[in-house]
Length: 121
Image: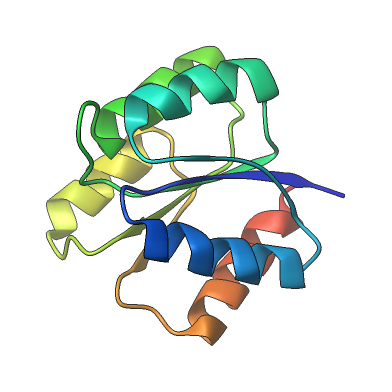
């Protein structure tokens, strides 16, 4: 069963992504409320998939993406963000993210994005 780490400063969003992940048989091995915790957890757990918010306290998502990619250039990161600034989304992809969905998202959009990310595992 592929593993996933969910990174978002919103507990509501972390729980929602957790429920969807479990529906498609992903093992939620960690959740993190900020990028600093996420990098530490990623280094220890090396999950197959990471969902990443961009706007978080302590360490933002763009910096976190860069740090995770330094640890593992093949990291599988799906950005889930409310930012509608296309330049930031493009930067996230340039830094190594492999997918992007916007908040608010429907359950179907999240399910489809997670499924697509799992195809690369």
